[in-house]
Length: 351
Ligand code: NAD
Ligand code: UGA
Image 1 (cartoon, protein in one colour):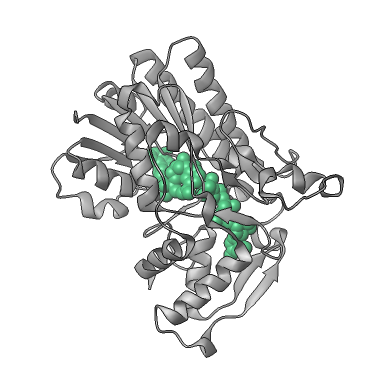
Image 2 (cartoon, rainbow, N blue to C red):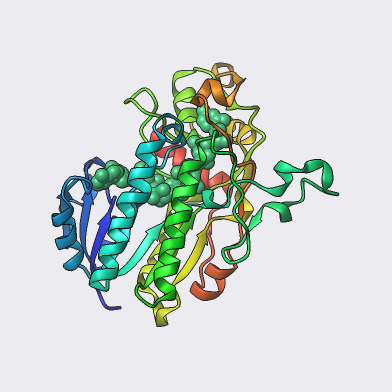
């Protein structure tokens, strides 16, 4: 395999830090750019690693220079937690769309290949969530089975500003696609479906902000405080263990025979679908069975409204199952870890 000089933007985040470690292991040179270095601690002394402390919104010329110097650009920078979409929607738009568009446009100008992280959130909600009464079987998984090329994107109203994240990611995808149509950009778009694993997020009490559900539930278990189900917890997600996800991303980086050129890939584990309520129970069971907690000390599971938990403007994806046919056929990739292993290995890090 030819090794490359890779610029990883947002390398200090959850996915970026795992990806950087794997790229270094494979012998690539990685310029790992971020504003927070902690998650890259394990990479510091490895050959080929350079940490670049740079806020891309403040140093555009430096960013251009770094892109010029790279064989491949991987863009992971975003505000990626729903709490921020609700509290600071304009910041989400500026970072996730405006700043990311600048990166893409430099790649166009400099003819650099770009791997752009998007999200399964672009699919939005299912038809079943909108018109359940008009469907013979609103619970059919077929209604939530999302395919890259054919599934439309269904978002809530403008007043439900949670969707600014999805909308910004979608518009960026559409711009990349349009550059591709004119043969001006070689890109690959990745739509992750709820990856989890070590270092996913801080625990809620560690610093200000709103992490993802796994961290809330983990802290509730560690501190015996209530596990809160937003709007009852019947909404579902398909969780993917980070190592499975990284194996797929590496195949996209390698891009054998150009199979990823101008392509969009779902990365996710369709068999790992679980409701948030069932996730809370699974984490409780694992905490007792695998980590020695007493069942008597488990936190209670309570329900809370979306508005109480996140604030006004929250809405939700009811269900999303990735169609991974493209990743399977073009990349020969399949995830290995089932939901129990995925949650167990993620919890082990925090316990
Ligand atoms: P993350 O928040 O852990 O990582 C994002 C990183 O970007 C952070 O380390 C942050 O410090 C950095 N960053 C933010 N603003 C910056 C700036 N101005 N300059 C430099 N760096 C900056 O998120 P993640 O979970 O690793 O997600 C990575 C990408 O994948 C994001 O684009 C996200 O939208 C997308 N995604 C992730 C998931 C998932 O399951 N984790 C799901 C769907 C989409
Ligand atoms: C997240 C983020 O939006 C993105 O990083 C990403 O695009 C996407 O996941 C993804 O990983 O694919 P979401 O799954 O809604 O979206 O975020 P979580 O915070 O993990 O919430 C999952 C569900 O749990 C939501 O329905 C939320 O309302 C619920 N929740 C959250 C609870 O029931 N209790 C909590 O304490 C926190």
